[in-house]
Length: 115
Image (tube, rainbow, N blue to C red; front, top):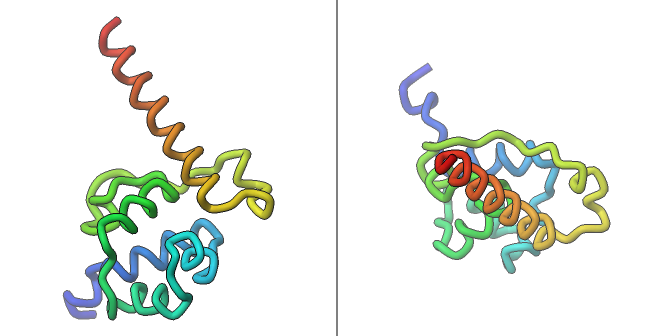
């Protein structure tokens, strides 16, 4: 295996994270306002994400934009109770809940440091 095969590309990472969350390309396309074929191109590194799409995906997947772009920083799939019935939740709803959870965790860390 050559060095090139060991490096995870942005497209590889996008596909891996999407599959870990059990989302389809169609769901992600709808969430970002794209067509399914555009998601396929992103995942095969034939298209580059715009910054607003990176932010939306980082909220959806609860990771930093740097993780999506560079693979640096923390990421672990979130197993939240509200995700168990995601057929009734839009990806926008899930992303908003994730954003709120991130903010609450951040505020908790700040509070812990001040005590």
